[in-house]
Length: 305
Ligand SMILES: Nc1nc2c(ncn2[C@@H]2O[C@H](COP(=O)(O)OP(=O)(O)OP(=O)(O)O)[C@@H](O)[C@H]2O)c(=O)[nH]1
Ligand SMILES: [Zn+2]
Image (tube, rainbow, N blue to C red):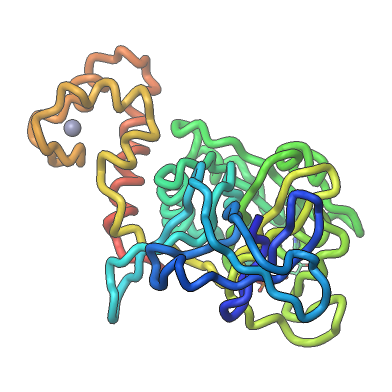
């Protein structure tokens, strides 16, 4: 398993639990198509002893069960999609309820990325000691996104146990804006992680690492927390309306009756989802669910923050 990537060197963990450093074998090719990312399962040859100054060769990347992607927003290569983490089960969207203010559009974009990746999204709302989560949570009710709420009271992180339970035995990617308390959480989940909090690395005392790539940290109860220090937003231009729709089984079934090429957006003529919501087959929640789906659809199209 790939646990970290740094300038062409791959941190690997063998099935026997030996940390090994590897590089991509030439036959694997270059460019994004043959990218090796954190979470990938790879085949290695050569020196896999893990001894100092040895280097294994990555010759194969196993098929991925999920792939968290983003596409370049602008400049050269705009629209080119890249996988940033492979084989993760869930995306923990870490958002502070205050200080800094939550950014609902950013959360929506993370939700779209998770659904596209084939990962389960989970909201992790921090700083509940500063603001009530109810109003924010209401925005996600119709999407049935699970939510975990934490706060700091004294030296203790309240709600940490529920987070630990939700992460145990699974591979979870943590994403969040600067200052939301993601590092505080990672350090509590993985006691020897030494992630920089409040701008300073607690282990080294030096400034925050400039490394922007993801790193997989083993959880004490099994499973992995994958921290993504440099990922603050997602370019989503590679995702189509039907890719997003596929994540919603109920809406997807209804949309089978849509006209060919239907955008499913609010202004789409004869979109079957409108009739479905109007009929009330899904109860009063149907309208809210459709509205939420369309909000995500719109967030996908809008520019990232
Ligand atoms: N009141 C309150 N403060 C918190 C909570 N969680 C974290 N903080 C504080 O918020 C600040 C930012 O926390 P960090 O863990 O450094 O945030 P981060 O998301 O990792 O941000 P960067 O380090 O900038 O990437 C720190 O001063 C934390 O002590 C919480 O639940 N309640
Ligand atoms: Zn439609």
